[in-house]
Image (cartoon, rainbow, N blue to C red; front, side, top):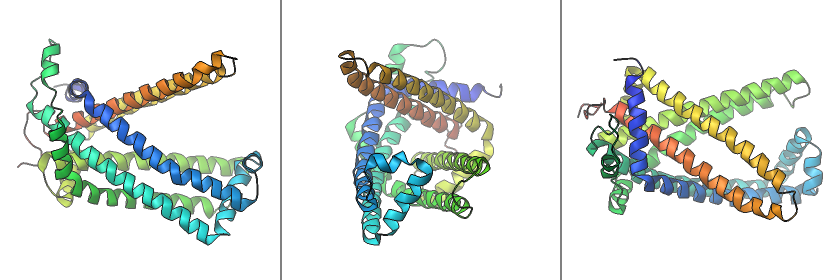
Length: 321
């Protein structure tokens, strides 16, 4: 078998089964939108709090540039510990509630896609039949709800580990930046840019491992500790297929992001045209929805591909039982 034959077929199968269960794409999109709205509330309140405590108008604050605005914001919050504590508590409550909500929805999504992947025939092999793809749909509210309830507790405990990893990465990055002071030269700016890229890479890897552990929990119906061991074994057995799926999907997401930026810039130019600019808002909303649904589709395609690779491509669970 060629090196990329299995991951290619897994990706094709993932795309077809995700299309067959398109309802979970919409469900995940709505869940992410709700999470974003929840996080926006304390963030907007925090921004207003910073403006009030700094004594500057928003335009004056950010007219100074990021190099001076960020220290001013930090000083304003540190000078008012009660306000800072209230802001952090509000962000923490919104983050915790939103994350638990996402964990519940993700459990239902994985349950539906796992049922579809297990029961569907070789839809990825030609000839491609629409009827076969349609029959692979397994979305039912009962299936999603039962899966969410079954996996929620373990996904919530796993999420605590994810937040701990995020905190560790953020702490190390913040220490690396703060210990050298504010950027005063091109070299310092390049150093901060390098730290940012490293943080992005670390968060991406952590998110991939988090997804693989979720898959191990769902497929093998095991606890978190056992799933971590089995996910590590999965990575050790099939690093190249996993890397292939990850690179392909990440590249498609990057291309989609670039295209969305170009579309946003084009719509921004239209917004300055009298009367015609009124059409920019619905077009921007439509572009946001298309981008969000596309990214969810790509992410769930990768999820099904990982499930296929994890099960060995032959219906045999990788955990052995």
